[in-house]
Structures are given as structure tokens and as C-alpha cells.
Image (tube, rainbow, N blue to C red; front, side):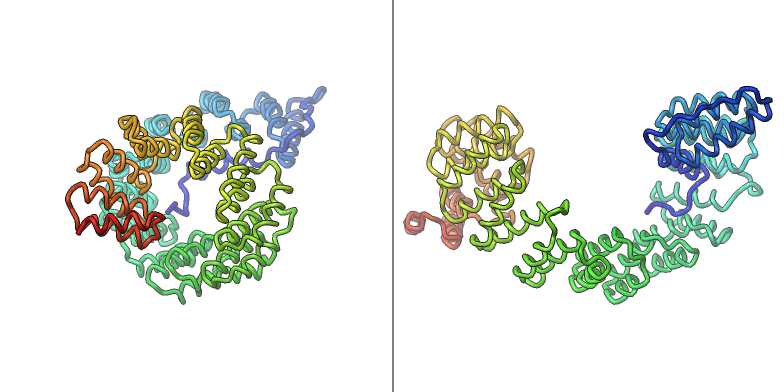
Length: 560
């Protein structure tokens, strides 16, 4: 968990970054002229102009004004401000050039050293950041803040032992509670949990209000499943006034880990009502298996944001998965207005729900609407192909995919769908032509690799290439039961029965029910002389309504 309190350098990071947020585009250029004024009056003029440009959020126009100020009345603060402006404008090199100039004029100015170190730290250039701080410490060896910040940089860089050596060398009279905290972070990085906890407790004895230490303590307890201690630490953070969404999320998670849904919901009552927080909290309830709690969080969101498309989508999915109420899901999704950015998603979701439940009369007008409203979205053509395919009209589905290729000739998924349709229409030559075309465009397309490899194996030709293609597909998706089955079948066709048996056994362990895979399982087991497993494979294939029922029954008889 990121710490809540920040080191000085991390706080400076915010200062450097803030100037980028205030910038306004196309702002009128300032006229930094003060002709006729005395140097003192000119400096006052430029300072007032700089303040006004800062207020208006015009950093680019402020740069020449601050440069004039530095000419007239230089100070470390002006060099710092000019560095901030350049950082906000996205120019770290110029930032460092300004800081270098300032340090040449004010070599003992700590803030400029810290800004220089931080400019490297923000780019994760830890070596340069630590070198800057070491240089300052060489001239100011008793500066406790510099020692502390160097320790923080070393911890951030993952140089944990080096951080411990440095912080451990600081004399007792110059130590700070934050140093004990950074030592704890270093011990934690070295997986020395006991020492890390000891140092955190030391830091908190010295400064009971050190938020970063409480945060790290809570995190370490949570990692070790010490939920009660973690909760106490997070509650302490709340007591100290840090009541951001992250702390509440941690408390909700801890309650759910302890299987205390009621406590988690109590936390939700006190927690912020921020949209992102509520979404994350609802995800926690779902992930931990507390659907009722998730529904209650969703109800709270719906009360606050009844027309939110995001909320509507989640309510619709809950209606499908928890309530099994398809009509309610359709009604909710239909409430997404046509001018909403998520309207296309609402259409697609409704079509998919209708197709999944074979409600074709519901799907047809939605597909037509999607094609008309979003003519450049290929997904609606794909859904139309599925619409015909699920009704058994393969010719019509193939025609839809052919239309897709006329509109989007280079669409790889469109090519694949068209090729599969041709294969199912027994047009093997056309299907292979299309799949080879896919491989010429996308050599690592796993589905096309598997298709061609399996087709070659089925035909009993180019078996070496078949194995090579399927092996490439498995590199993309090593756990695909279809690819494993294809590889098993290619080995079987090459007469490599033992390798085929190894692969088909892997295939059937995957969560998939496919009668062809079990048919292959039976054939390979039979070739090994394992009648028991062969019978198992054929019976499984029959249970899954294999289309060649009579042939499988004949093979079962032959095993007797």
C-alpha cells in the first residue's frame, strides 16, 4: 500500500508537477517590459506581473518574467520558481539547467539541492538523485533532513542495505522518527519482517502521529493475515484525519477477509460516496463472494446516480447473473440514451444476451439498429453472422462475413469468421486459402495457426508443418484445450501415439466439454491398447451428443 505521508522530496514532486496542471492553452503573451522604471520599481513590476500570470495559469508567459526578475533581484526562491515553470512545461533538462545556475550562485541552498535531486527522482534516475544529496551532505554532514531524504531515495531505489547503513550511521541526537520509518521500509524490502515491525513501533513511539508509519504497519499486518492488528492501524489512520477512499477500501477488504459482511457494510455507511470508491468496493464484495453486499452497494450507487450508464450496466449484469431476470436486464439497458457514449455497448450487450438465450426475435431489430446507427462498427456485422449461425443458416452467415470483407478487407477476425464458415459449409479449399491469407498478414494469429495445423492433420498431409503450426499457436495460448487436442491429433496422425496420449490427457483436464476431443481421446487410447480409457472417451463423446452417434456406438462394440 502506498504510504500516506510523504518525504520532503516526494512533497517537492507535487510542487514540481503542479505547474503543469495550471497551464492554459492559447493564452495571450505577456509583455514583460518596464522601460523607464528604476531597477527596484522594475523588480516590483515584474513580481506583480509574475503573480498575475501564475494566478491565470500561464507558465510559458511567466518564464521570461521570472528570468527578468532574476536579472534584477536574484534569489534562491526565484530559481526554484523558474525551475518549477520549466518542469511544468515538460522540459526537465531546462529545469536542471536553471537549478544548476542557482546552485552556482547559492551553493549552500538546501532547497535547490533538494529540487535538483527530485528532478532526477521523478524520472527514477536514482543514482543521480542520490549523488546530489551526497554532495550536499559532504558539505553539511550534520544536516538530518538531507540524511533522511537520501535514505528515502535509497529505499525507493531498492538499495535497502545501503539505506540501513546510511541511516544507522546517523547519531542519536540527529535522528528523526521518519528515519526509523525508512529503516522499517528497508527491512521490509529485505524480507526482515520482525525488524521492520520493531522499527515502525519505534517510529510511532517517537511520533504517534506519523501517518506513513501507521500505513506501513497496517500493510505489514495485512500481508501476514493479521487482520485485527491491521484494522487497528487503519482505524488509527482515520483518527488522525486521513479518511481518503484508500483507507476505507482497506477496511472493507479486511472485514470481508474475516468473513464479516455486516462490518464491511458498516464501513460502507461511513465511507465516502465517491463514484470510483463505490465501484471498487462493489468489486471487493463480488470478488469475495458476497453478492448480497454487492447489490446493497449498487443500490446505494443507483440512489445517488439513477441515470448513470455505468450503474445501469452493473444492475443489468446483476439482473442476469443473480436474479436470472433477462427482461429486467433488457429494460435497464434500454434506458441508456442514444446520445450516451455507452449506447453502442448497451446495444451490443442486449444482442448478446438475446443470442445467448436464443431469443432471435429480440436480437433481429437490435442488430439492424446497430448496423444503421454505427455503420463503421464491424461488431454489429459479426453479431448478425452469429444470429444466422445460431439458427443453422450457415449460408446466410457466410454471406454476412463476405459482406464484412467487402467493407473491411483487411479485418483479420472477419477473415477468420469467413474461413470457419466456409469450412462448415464443406468448402475446405476456400477455408484453407483464407486461413493462409490470415497467416500472411498476422503470422502469430493463434486461431489461424491451429486451424491450418488441424486441417493438415485431418487430411494426413504436411504433418511436420501441422505440428509446427499448432506448437506456435500453443505458445500464444498454452492452455487452450482445442490447441492441445489439435497437437494430440497431429502426433496421432504421425504415428506418435505416446506423445498424442500425453497431449490429449492435458486437453481433457481443461474446463471444456467438446465431443470431438473425447472422441480423439478414445481413438488414441484404443491405439495404445487401453480399452478402458477408450470406452471412457467414446461414452463421454456420446453423452455430449456427438453428431456421429452410430459410428461411436460401433467403435464401442468393437472394444468388447
